[in-house]
Image (tube, rainbow, N blue to C red):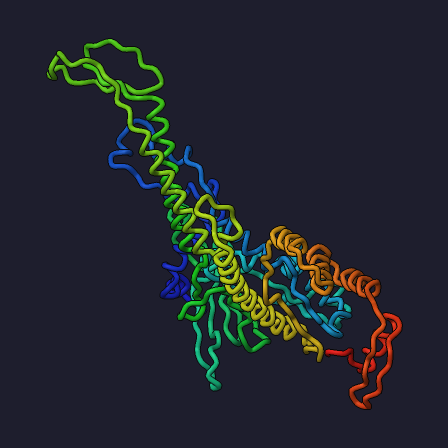
Length: 493
């Protein structure tokens, strides 16, 4: 059993990881949560003015959320085609069906759960996934199905994983020896769970509602861990050298977004000052204040001075807008989304667009690989909880390439190629097949259309058996297909 002091101890990387995760998560969510981070640079003496000048700037500055846009783009490509799972005989198990349809016991399917986990991992740097099972004994599987007692998954962000420790086993594999997570917290209590290979310890700690300091351990429970290992999976699209710590994929985007956010504040202030100039006058001069402000000069100043207006140049606004445009272009370059998002910069060449798509494809393929690895580890733990084994045909396939074709541009290219003056029939037929493949999504319908095209264009020809040298004339398209299945070759094959 841990003491209060031991419960307060955290991993050496925790403080830095939690701070970065908070910043990146607020950058992703935006809205009031982002404003609460106070990421606008304060002016000198701003807090000394009347009213909450800084708070007014926070309230009036809009956020152009590039972090969320980047994550949404990656997600749309990663899960455009859902992973394919061959579960073999497991598909007949009702508990497996429940696991697929409600992975976290909160209504999320396995695909939806992995989407959410991957989004958070890209933002915060990593996500811990626990595959646990209720501590309730059942006699038969039928009773477990009736009561809904099965293993389920839960997510923990880096802010809630306070401490962990890895160690190499005899085979040299790094294994999780200990992990401490914060389950829930309110003004009066905070609950912790500490996992070990042989046991699970749960603590309910009372805290001071004013200072937040821990006061006493109100309750303590200990359970046996029947697995013999800690059922946590760490999912990180970009891992760091420190085991259990990952790097955020949107860290640089978040910094550029903060720069744009500050520029937007400058533009808002500049437009407001330009529209409402400041009137400078001696104190004794009467003036009616409009929408702008008044600056009074001391009476000791030369009385010959006349009132005048202070108004900044509009060139400053243009400079800030150009800086914002450059930052947006930088975000698109670093995320390899220039070929997807419309830009106002110099148009990209065809080669540059193709290279950009290949770079994005490589990044997405790496993320898909980590998703597949994470899901397989989740299945390992889930099957152990249910005392099940993998069937012989079990497999999980995630997309390895992500098609980023500009179909409208390719179709336009094919139409131009068709009208280029090449009268060769084979060339024109090949163009027609590519048009069918580009415009018809269903593979079966594609095959039927192409087969029908080949049937209409069929001409009798000789086919030769490569084993015997026997030659036969295929009079119809159906005869051609039959001979082709028998191994007969067309002239030139």
